[in-house]
Image 1 (tube, rainbow, N blue to C red):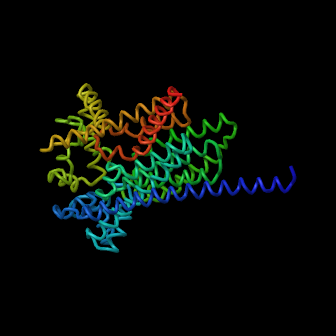
Image 2: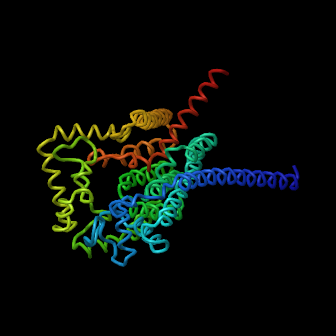
Image 3: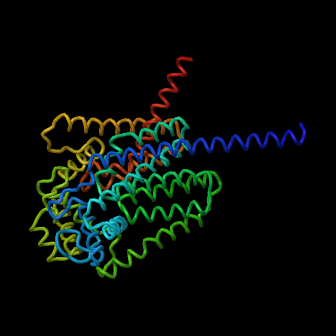
Length: 434
């Protein structure tokens, strides 16, 4: 073979690789555009951006909306309930500041601000198709990648949350999926830049939905262990990633300390949430009637004690009840496990709608569990990472209370292992037929 032949072969291979990359980009662009346009259509034609005006627009973001209004009015990060109640750490800061910017631009609690907020949610939901595709391609196959991305783009349940809730859910879901993707790639490609991206995105997760932090230690340990086994671990990269993470969240921690005179980690309402799920009359669901936004007596107590003391008192009440009723606490914790994975009961006059919703909720969990079991049995790459995600993130809700929205951040990964299950079943069927 002459040098010109080698050069021609190299050029052909390079051209083929570029063609494949261009083709994948076109596919991803098509999926994202379809997903985004579909969500915008549902949002716009369904008028889901018209939040109810009752209770002074409380349904527009609830506590997040209240804090955003305070910021927009120049009163700072404060007042998550009705009226001016002072500084708060009831909610993580990132989304309220984003919503406050929209209020400044388009008007407080305006339809325009609502439309833009839900459109941005829809964009992050659509971009999650990309992370799903790349994860599927990295871990399983191009077929699994395409199926998972298209299903997420078109699935009504994946469309529901971004177009109806002015909350951080879709943003946090996208961040978590991206962190998962970076972790998987770090296993084989140990770059400092990837570690720094990991630390930065984890900080964004912490500042938007700290509950998801439960997964991150397992994620980091998994990456380091896999790198160690492959003989390419660089611990100092992980240390730098951790330092960047803490550098990003440190300003908010400092703010909380200066405001409250004690250490409060990002979002400080865990004690109150614990009480809303545990106490006299607890049955495993959210006792919303005890929330300060719904209960005038509790709001009065919140105002009188201040946020930190109020949360401490509510935590004490819940702990006292748990210690006095350990058996009941165990029972309702098991119920919350069931509710998280198989659907939370809701009072409705439409029994068929309720049954259909919970049937779909249950089916997606069962498929995810089966897909995970197959991945673990076949020792599929990152199977243990999926396992630790499904174990760690729901854990806090088993002891407080559940809501269907709380499962959404891990639903892209649930979908991916479900599609993997069907791909393996199809492969097995084809092998038997052959």
